[in-house]
Image (cartoon, rainbow, N blue to C red; front, side):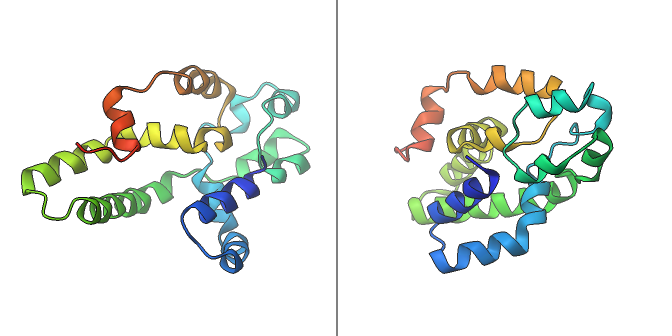
Length: 165
């Protein structure tokens, strides 16, 4: 699946109307690309252009890369991460309040901590296919490939499937 199809699919799953998806993708492509570029995706982390090609990244934009110097032009997600964390936390809080209205404060806090945890969000990203589209170094790719095939715990699955806490 191409990066564009992946992003458009995520927008569809989020409920965005069909006529709005393509314009949002076109306007925001550089941000989508940046959000999926790890800081390790740099020239010095590849031995040659063949190693880059062998990784079969989903971004069509990489097909035009002729030498490794060109990949250093891709900014990483580090700047976006700051605002993204705040947006994700806000969305999680809204989801909890909608899903479980009237939940006592202690339970709200417990639910938020579980859903906003790195472990849960990583599991969510894995299930949604995010890891297949992240630009990263070969070394990190090997580590991520081992990790992304790991098993989820029962608690993570219950949260993801929307079962009661």
